[in-house]
Image 1 (cartoon, protein in one colour):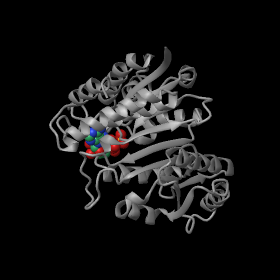
Image 2 (cartoon, rainbow, N blue to C red):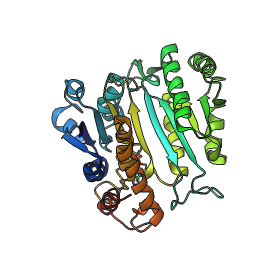
Image 3 (cartoon, rainbow, N blue to C red):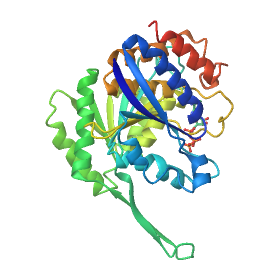
Image 4 (cartoon, helix red, strand yellow):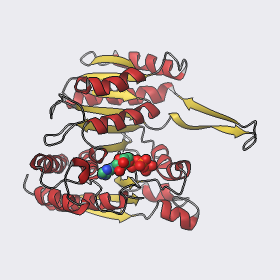
Length: 356
Ligand code: ATP
């Protein structure tokens, strides 16, 4: 019996509901694969902030450190600025646990309609590897003469040789592991960002020499955005800085059908700290509390977590059950053209996961 201790942070908005369905599916898949889950919930997020003046307690990372993984919903609230919610919860976890890889697969599944003309299920199958601890999200900068007419803001991006190389190397290893197109595309804007992104380009060229079996491509971010729409089927593994990876994964999510289908893992590949798995989407205030959020991104994120923990068979079962629900097309939330609730989709996957 494999025992996994999972910290659960549902967070805000639809995060609360979609995590419920991910937990349902994990509980359903566990017995058949000899897994025991111990889930411990942490009630952190904007409600916690409004009561305590901070998004999570000061010793949060000490509390999370001993867990095998973290299962996370979403963070964000219309009444509290993002720089408080995001910087108070998710970013400290990513940085504190050195989760320097954010892995975000985008797959066009059978049964799902893409807004792009002429692209068929199975054709789009890419993973964005987003740098997750430095780059444009580095917490370096400040204000001077704040709230006056002379106000100045300085925002610095931080690119380190070590930080670039390790995330780029992960992308090459992933291209090998996937065994698909065996190609890594690097995305920068080094024609305009003449220091950090030039360092990134150099690191990409150096690391790529270690992987002669993997083909490479380098794109400027504007061309990459265009090609995510024009020829998404040409991509395999895409590696990008923090900001560009964030933008590209929203495009990747929408061209493969819905924000409600895109999973992600914030990974510390060395396993020194727990990794954190969460849907790409945010708290979706426009549909929060309506019971119609698509839970499949959260469920697929649970599948990624299982794979990361070494429960390969259980992870594949989750993946297959989701694919079956999509292909049957009977129990889908409104974002995918259906009329089912979050709960009904979760129950459908949980039923199938024991038999696929
Ligand atoms: P946040 O600030 O928390 O990121 P947001 O509204 O800016 O919130 P998302 O939460 O990612 O960003 O939502 C973007 C759009 O995608 C919204 O229209 C939302 O309704 C939709 N969406 C997000 N998640 C889901 C989901 N699970 N199911 C269906 N639609 C979703």
